[in-house]
Length: 346
Image 1 (cartoon, one colour):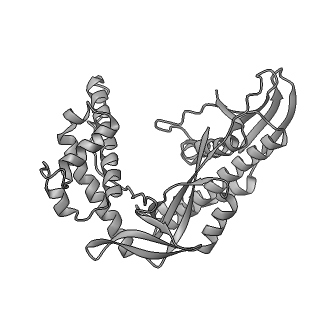
Image 2 (cartoon, one colour):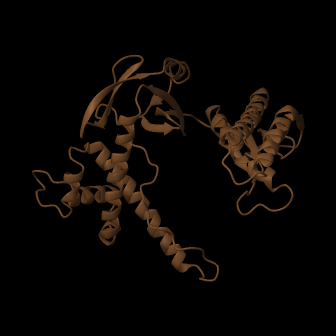
Image 3 (cartoon, helix red, strand yellow):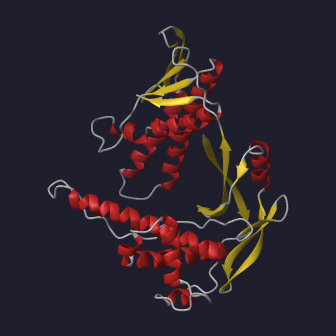
């Protein structure tokens, strides 16, 4: 089984140049989206690779392909890197394919219960992948070169990477395969997001010899855990109550309520604090579950299937909105697979 993880490295001293690069990439994707919508009757009958080649034949002029249908692409996006062009085409094909599927399902649904018609796809907040050698080159331990759109052309610039981020990756990801990074912006800072791939083998213990870790995630108590054998023998019970953290979260939410009494105003600082406390609770809960699982050498971790979709009603609807049960399960799933444990939902 393949597991993927993502680590971010902060880029120093650049802002405007990187912003123009992302904007240029999104405009190219929007161009291909319009082409895909017009040519979808032909594209839908082709395989994924054939769709990519057909789109390039329609838009990109070369020596072997002098006559193209959409000549404005090479004029608007002069010297657009080939890897980014193919990434934008793939992104556009995926969005149009999803749109057509949603539209077909919408047409089949009863008009009395179906919602609004799916809107036409747009590039949205996508970010370019900087493919190795062609778009990204590591020049030193804490330095690299990336190809960006600068001075109306595509050129290489040297960037400095934050030392603490690079050292963290070297310490924790030395045995994993590093993939091509993605240029990302969070807040006012720019990062290179490096995906890492590793292959793990899940345990194949007989079902009659397995140690099972049953987890009950609650609104008031973070987690209740029961460790048992396949025959029902209880090996241990563990409880996690984060009283201080929940009190801090309640206090943060009450401050938001009080601020909202004075009118409909934006309070990002208060929401940021509440979300930070909530994320801290989820992280500590996931860490506690994995510590217990490793203590008993559990083979399988079992969660209750929690359907949190739909409109929340009742006196506890705010708690349900803030409840990060899915986030906890995702963290535990990623960590458990690295230890060869299986995860089940019932």
